[in-house]
Length: 309
Image (tube, rainbow, N blue to C red; front, side, top):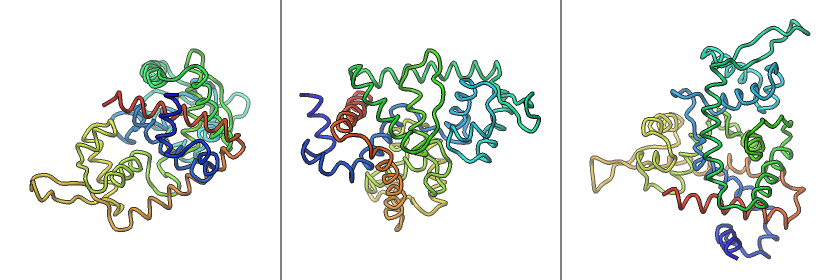
């Protein structure tokens, strides 16, 4: 009963109305849950910062799982343009995390391999990721975890992403989480044609939600990122003409983040495209199954968001 109460409160509808309006609202619901899940799972990585980007981590993981993979196949697995993947590979290769060798079978192609340095880096990242994911999933029963995994798989499969191997020893949900994250373009630098990455999109939506009552320091805290990273993201959004700063009349030393005139309609348009994609991806899932999957997702983001404060 507690599970049903939490899910229905978050979804804002009863079971009957949920079944009726599910297909039109589910895309936005899932996007909102993923946004919260990214924050809780510490997935908001600032591209170009001291750490490697989330896309680069995904590339390392797939090369580790498929030694000798080509850039062409890796681009299909990551659902990213080949040129973008080549740039990512070159960046991690310069850091000696990957190596590339000419294929013995076809001299026109290079095969990618993870280096010893790359293995050490990835194992450290794996340990943190596994610990955080298991903490996030603690409120769920094994059956509910399977429901969430099935939801992630449906999003990825329905979006046309090719499958990839499971890695030995990792939580079974991680592979499908990676695939659905890619399907939602949350590791891309160009989020649904917006020219923004996930960090910018997260901050923009946070300002939209808070309605001109958010300071940069508060944004950094809510997004679980350093203040310096939040400042960098803000600079990008200001350059795009989406966010501005506004002086606090009660404290002239402080300023708030505010949306520029066209930012809200811009958010609606881009997120609408994303919602449509999600809705199409899960269109074959039975309503009662989808309801159970959304309940499991709702429990994670609500329970852990409360405990994380």
